[in-house]
Length: 335
Ligand code: DAH
Image (cartoon, rainbow, N blue to C red; front, side, top):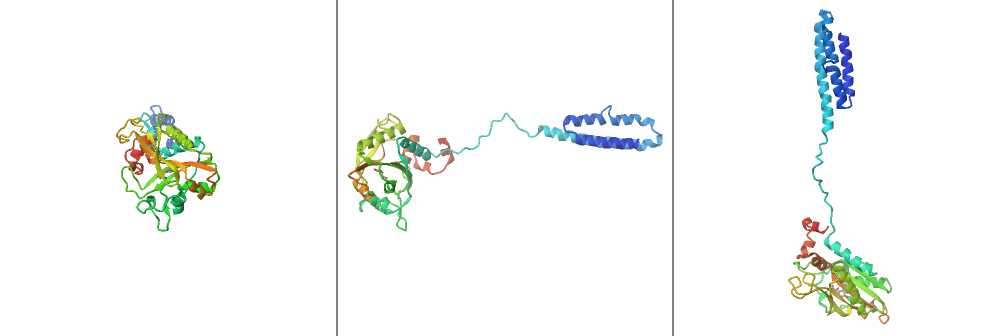
């Protein structure tokens, strides 16, 4: 009897250990601990063994039953747990990953580039730390011009300047290639401005330059009208208002009809009906001669515009600082 018990014990332990599922573990439990199982069977055979062996056999059998109950329970828990975990509630709404968004200045810059690209313009760039020559002299800026003043321009101790406009890229491009030249140059510019709702000591401009034989002011007007209409909508009117820039002659400031009141006059355009967008003009012959172009043969137009102004106007942003704060609650809106 004792031997039989030991044999069943080994067999039962192995079966519980090898069980691979809850069903197999339950089957083992039934086989050994069930009402008609092996243990019950042995108990039933008790009366048939010699009386002197009974106490020892009974004790061994009780111990085995207790052991197997623990083993069976452990196996059941193991598989029950496996089945329940991982506890995923598939009815919960998903958690959105935080996707980045393009900065409004990036969006607008790309739009501007796209429009000019379609008209055959290439994208050029130049350094933000410029020489006085490229920033002023080569652009025909007279020595007395107020933009050269230290109160307007950020001079570096080594004599360089933080470029005050993207116009020096005109010079760098013309020095590097022969006409026809058809480029735009987006980038950062710096001025000694006190920050307020519409001013920042750093902001962005896009320069445009077109030089070839026979380029006229009609090309300038046609191109900018097409550009502003694509950017702001077909209803947009463009106005060229005489002005002075050192590197163009004649020069004009470019206004467009206010998007918000369609030119009737409102708070945004300060009742003018027009919004100033940038400067433009026919490239001054002095500038062409300065880069070695024959100003008798070639003519060209140039233009410049502020990217912040466009973004603020398009998106109705009333404080330029919102564009630099890096506040994701603001930036998240421009997806
Ligand atoms: N550079 C000028 C500014 O920053 C803008 C400008 C005016 C650019 C006329 C031009 C131009 O290319 O032709 O105020």
